[in-house]
View (cartoon, helix red, strand yellow):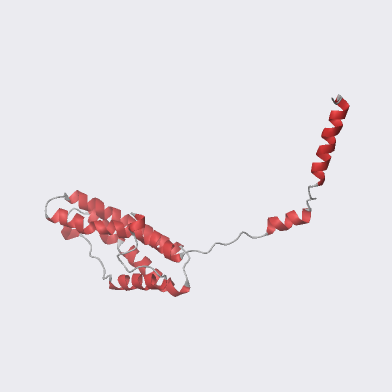
Length: 170
C-alpha cells in the first residue's frame, strides 16, 4: 500500500496536525498560577467542638457504671482506677485540643472556661488512678460554670443540648 517513506510522512503529518491544536503555555501564566493561595475551607466549628469533647464525654458516661460496679462489688478498685486514669488523659487531650483550635469570638470565652475546667479535672482523676485509698483522693472543683459554658457553646454553634450529639463518635 504505502511505501515506508509515505507511511512515515503520514505519521509525521498527523502528529503535526494534533500538536497544532495545543495552545502555547505562557510562563507568566504558570508563575501566576503557582503563586495563587489555596482556597481556605470554612471550618465547621460545631463539628470541631463535638469531635474534641465527645471522646471525653463518652468516657465520662462510663463513670456511673464504673463507680456503681465498684460500690456493689461487681468490679475491683483497679478497674475504677484504670477508668480514672483514662479520664485524666481524656481531660488533658480535651483541654489541649480546645486551646489549640481556632474558634469564633462569640464562643472563645466559653471555650477557654471549658479548657481550664478540663485541665483542672486532671489532678483529681490522676489522684483516683494512682492512690488506692479513696481517703487520699483529691476533690473535684465545682463544675457548675463548666456546664453553663458548654451550654453556651452548644447554643451559639447550633448544636444539641449537653448530653446529646455524641452518638456519631461512639
